[in-house]
Length: 328
View 1 (tube, one colour):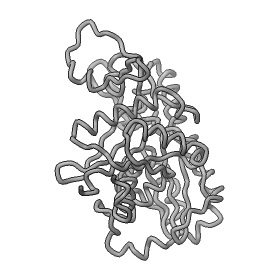
View 2 (cartoon, rainbow, N blue to C red):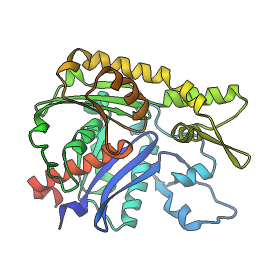
View 3 (cartoon, rainbow, N blue to C red):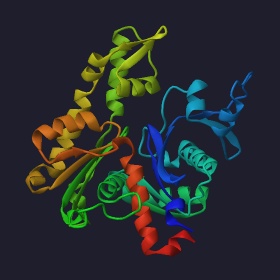
View 4 (cartoon, rainbow, N blue to C red):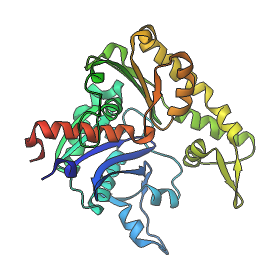
């Protein structure tokens, strides 16, 4: 058994599930929107295979997940509370992740999954139990920005990138700008500095503000639609796309300012001594634009949206190579 075939990075976020796995000679990533709604009998199903793929059963109840849930009327993503691990939506997203991997012929033996920094200690046992119960394999919980750190250092085979062996022992800060939380992680000489790590608000605040700005213009848009507009700066109106960059820019500053202030609170007094400040996540670009003006050692992750899951997979490979029993 080659570890690369059975180690998976799993980042279950509030905007979407990000998966990283090996298939057909390369590392693949996949995104499942974090949207869950009770399933209903469709009068006419034009795409039954897709509907079947996006339907899961939890405790005897059927749920639509991802694109099917959106198409059938769900208008917001799940889990906008720190207690969401206890809800049915999280389990539904795990079940859908399992069926998606199975469609590629991937049956994980080790899954690395993450949690926000501020809930890591309190929720890691619950995360472990849920992922293990669905996938029936070994599970390694980590703080989410740990994945970004590993993604920066390691290649897809779980080995250090060229010239990165000594770099790993330098001082790193990771800022993972997610939908519900922004997580800050400080590493020094490969040690997690917990007192300088923590969580701040995520980009959902900016999404809500964008929804408000659109309402002022007389445009009603769902939260899910606003999340897409944040990425594209375009809105579809009567068959054509309209540029709304000005509204997106107006919606972002309050959230970004809050993130930047929390980053300053946690690592500002050490910024001079930090070698690398890596910024990742779906909302990384506006935060990078602000912080790079303060600290020149800031850089964007190579693949910001999937950096967490890619790095989790890489870290899992390291663990499996060092301890093959993890794959039994």
